[in-house]
Amino acid sequence: MKKFWRNPVVAFLGSLKLSGVVMALIAFAAAKATFIESDYGRDAAYDLVYAAPWFEGLLGLLILSLTLLFFRRWPYKLKQSGFMLLHLSIIVILIAAAMTRYLGFEGTMRIREGESANTYFSEKPHIQARIDGHTASFGVRLWRSGENDLFKKIHLGGREYELGTTEYWPRFKQSYQPGPGGRPALQYGLASGGEVTDAMLVMGDRTRIGNAQVYYRETGFRGEVARSPFGDLRIHIDGESCSI
Image 1 (tube, rainbow, N blue to C red):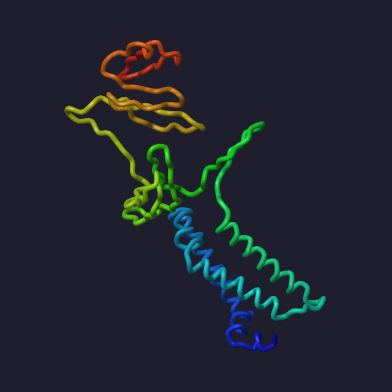
Image 2: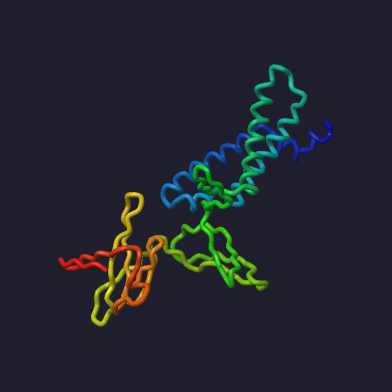
């Protein structure tokens, strides 16, 4: 066993100096990630630091170094119990973090009182495709504006497809401008949670508001649609009001 600890590689990996240097690098990287998250968002910090291979390599090197350092001084005396518990706790925390990172899922599960649930909302955005009732998706972290090369092979209906994104514009907003020959459009607001979201419905199109199907038609409603049980829709345009 003494021959093992005399190995220069083992001695270097299990040295207190290496553990200190790696801890300092991890602390510096975490501090840098805080500024990245403040400027570009959480996904950018994960993509550039927390989920980067070099950062995971530092964490793995720290686990290896602390483990070797822990057993190098075995057995411990009573007065060294603080040193032993400190290193052991750091090793356990890092291993648990690695298990959460690779085996766990991050998300929100909404469970009302008296109800049960078996689905959750992932904290990570997903690109999803659906064909003939079959669905496939994979998680992505989109934060860099412009061109993005994020593709992954998926299987749907017994066939293989390549699904991904080529561009990402987080602040892209669709707007309508008045012009000659354009179709009439109705702008409305949806109030939810104390916030109002503007939306636009162009003549001839349809949309869904809650459980109600909404149409903007050139002609009147006929049949069952004319006797809708949802009540009246009141519209105010240019100082005049009408109800449907």
